[in-house]
Amino acid sequence: MKQNILKAMETGELQAFYQPQYDAISGKIVSAEALVRWITSDNKIIPPDKFIPDAETKGYVTEIDWYMTEQVCQMLATQKQNHEKQFPIAINFSRYHIQESDFTEKLCAIADKYAIPHALLEVEITESAMVNEEAKILNWLNSVRNAGFTIAIDDFGSGLSSLQFVKDMPADILKIDKSLLSHNCENEKERVVLESIFYFANRLHMITIAEGVETKEQLQFLRTCDCKKIQGYLFAKPMSKSDYLAICKNSQSVENTEDILNMQTPASAMNLLMRVLFQKYPLVIFSNLTRNSYYMMAYEDFTATSCPSTGIFEELIIHGASSMHPDDQQIFAQTFNRKNLLKAYANGESKIRLITRQLGDDGQYRPVETTDYFIKTSSSDDVLVITLCENLPLEN
Image (cartoon, rainbow, N blue to C red; front, top):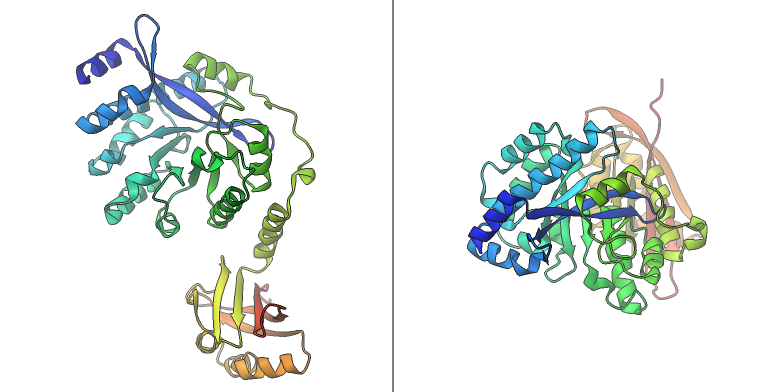
């Protein structure tokens, strides 16, 4: 099989097909995935599942991946020469590339050979390829990403998914496996799982792509989850280079979309609301005063980034006071003392507000407004607090 594959590369029988990826809302092409196809001399199409497993087992799959990279760069170079639209292309890379010490250098060399901006190439690797040798994988991905290429995790949800692992990996894109759409997004459990995945991916600022989208029901639900891109037969099948170039040249919306407001579910509307909230309040903390505990829901672009993400509430206040200007430490500690907060709640207070000077990571003090909102739920007697912290403008 290997010799036949190598010959197919030489004769051009091994080809890159392209499956466009579309913006979930506008329906416009925004990127694509390169997929290998073997077109024999008598025009028979041999799908990858007929030869890739053998290439994986015998270790020559890396040669196919590099061949595909060359094909993609040649196609992008053609678009550039013809002054046509270019879109990022995802290329699948086997886990065996992690053992290549010069992988990033080789990838850069091919891209630079055709003067392709690195941002136009997406290195796509399956989540199953990442379950072993995490330290080596992390170094490999960081090297690729630091060179300007985009990292995509493919087939997420197909088996060994680990949210902790995704959190730690320097990936830009999360591709949701089509198996999670198997019930056409009409099964309640399936919908809850998908909503949860898209929520955490968006909170991690990852671009989400749903694979294998084949029905309008799937599309409509994915839109409500704030899925960014759609890939599947509903919009387009994998196509030859010439067909893909024609689509890019005449890129239009694949369907008439309805008003975005009509597609909002409570879950997607909540995502939009939270996005606005985090813009104003880069530090959001949920606390249980009764149980003396807390955890952070957001910690983005705040003045200081050294606060533990979860723990004991009283220790949080001690830590917070220590980061204040010396003249503000005592009032901060007294105002947000757990016992004082519980007393304020018992007295009917709805919120506690204080402006202090916070020492930033750059060594400069900046004004910060901290507001505690008391929350009482019908399901528990615990007294809960939501803390919103806002960076204020520096005084002249």
